[in-house]
Image 1: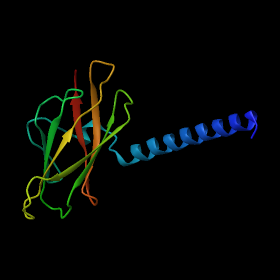
Image 2 (image 1 turned 90 degrees about the vertical axis):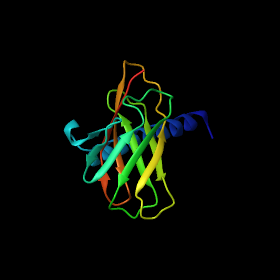
Image 3 (image 1 turned 180 degrees about the vertical axis):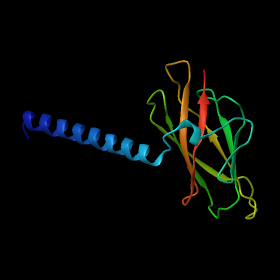
Length: 146
């Protein structure tokens, strides 16, 4: 294969990747609420949205330091929850966290997970999220500061 053909194929693959990434970003925006008021801002105080109670082990998350998230989701039969976070002020990629049951008791619907967010270049960043049990969604908001 000639060098010219390799360059064309490499550029084509790069362009395809950019288009797929832009499409994924568009889909993420469609499933997220458009206003900050529609999010549940997490801290050590319990925040309730659609009968789902959420809290963090610290009020402000710091980069590269583990923070526990605890969720009480009464009306679910899910064995785990999935949290997907994306930065608002900076594009730091997507962070996905799996929340597992706190107890082996099937009637207790408390889930916990560990967050570790990346370093940002600014003074801080807000992370908007989608937390799902596979059927329903709630929308947490997490503030991270250095």
